[in-house]
Length: 526
Image 1 (tube, one colour):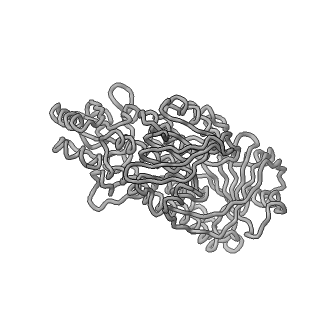
Image 2 (cartoon, rainbow, N blue to C red):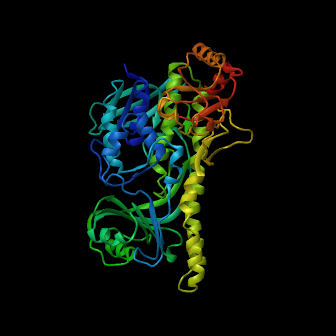
Image 3 (cartoon, rainbow, N blue to C red):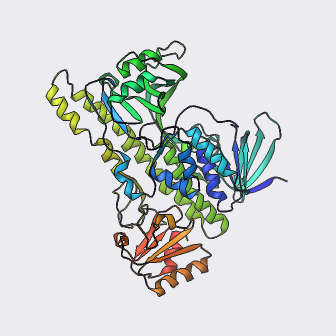
């Protein structure tokens, strides 16, 4: 008889393991299938946002993540942009994600993905309901109205068996076998661009960048590259680096002059000790849907893009935080199929706009700038335009505020849409992430939230609170109530009652309960 789980996760990278933690802390039985036993050493997924650190705090690993960093504590995480080379005359290092810090409960962080994976794998061991099978691969899967079956085996071909589950989630990367088997297509934008990735050590480069304020990423814009970047990123201090840059499409890694390209971008003959060189293809691909029946996809299986702006791993983790509580609600009986369907409805538009408006459009804007302005032709015109670009990165992060105003399980505004674009506000707005505000006991609202639903009752009447408690009890919906006054900064929420769902998004806000039963019915997909 096949072993049965509530959820099976195919893929045990940070997204798959994160989903295992998200489900494990809710007592959901699940298996994780991951061929890799050991972790690689290619630096990627390094730029972790404030929102991602909120997830790590909720999972109980935020201190361990910060301890696993390779950069010195407090080292600047932002980016610097230079014209023609790092040693060129023109550069700027504007403010970035720190501009939106007060709207989140955590500082951002920077560390290689393999360090993040190490911490998450250790945390996974704390959940006996999670069967983590590292060194196992997934095979054929089938599904019907009652569940999913999948063939699995160790990577050496031994111990083959078939597992069953209520739901399956493919977190198995850009070349997802799960996505292919269930027939989900992807819309793809191929830039026809081959990119170099080099990992190396160079004390010369560290010494040269001391002319700048401390930064973790250094972009170089060259007119002939038409908006595509050459960029350096720090792995550790003082001499650990990676480098990405476009190369001719017919290049061969065995003969390509990686050192020459690095020296061109650096602007001087730096010494480099290479640890890895390889090519990758630059493209954006987004799945046409994130669910087929009882099977879902998340992370790179659902959306993949070049490493521009730190949107990849962060979005993948946001996927599984959105999906995890909904899966738990469904198998525990208080959520519906409509609630599960809201995952694709909410997340896909956000990433589509992220790819289009925050990645691709930036390349095009850089190309237009480089084509229009040239200091060798009109220095004064170039310098005025260059100075005007300094606020570009900060404005992007201020505009990047994913929200689900049009979700059918939200009480969003009329005419709202699910979007990556928004305005950061302290006001509690249905469809938007809850901003942290202080509570009277010295904590903040965000740190006090339940991992289920939470009702913030700020100066609200006992009758209104009891109405929600009774409606939640009738639905067997886990609900935590936080009572406090509306003063002391909490007036910025502009509501006496704020209902927050398990992924810390506001679903409803008002000054009176109204029909509490109808509110809870909608936000759980009934």
